[in-house]
Length: 114
Length: 108
Image 1 (cartoon, each protein chain N blue to C red):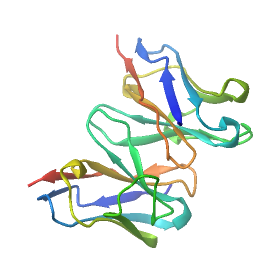
Image 2: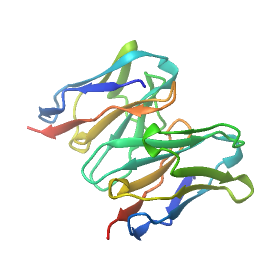
Image 3: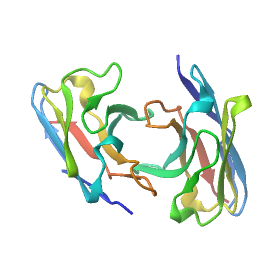
């Protein structure tokens, strides 16, 4: 059974940092592109970043302006999102999703507030 | 950036009725990289359709997708109570990937 489990969310002050993790199981993680998608409270889905299976190709939403870094460790079946210089508008549930969005994690809530 | 515009914003229908949801792209999208997802309150999205018209694993055949180029459609032939939710189209043909703003299908 394919499972994606996010962790690392929480309350952080504006300007702070947070690292999200997504642990995958039930499939060959190293064969798939992985994505981060976020959803602000009461809002729609927003693509954040994608990373190819080997990590060679990385893409970000323009709005992030270099504050977020996606990475992966195929040996640990894990996907990461390092988030720096966090702002109130980054408050959202962050989901990891497999390549073609056929599997999603349950999400982890990031709240940026003083 | 490819902008996906979904219409209508809200669709008020009764169980058993047919739902037709539209997704229009600001520029052509390869059908291979166009999908539809369903989201219920408090839950993660679930993929319904990929490749514009192929049902994902376990998705009932009352859900169907069609379209090409800039115009895509999700049709629910007969609404079941569990189908009342928000539906998103998404494209991952080009970066930045984008989602439509969503169509809420609510009980009339």
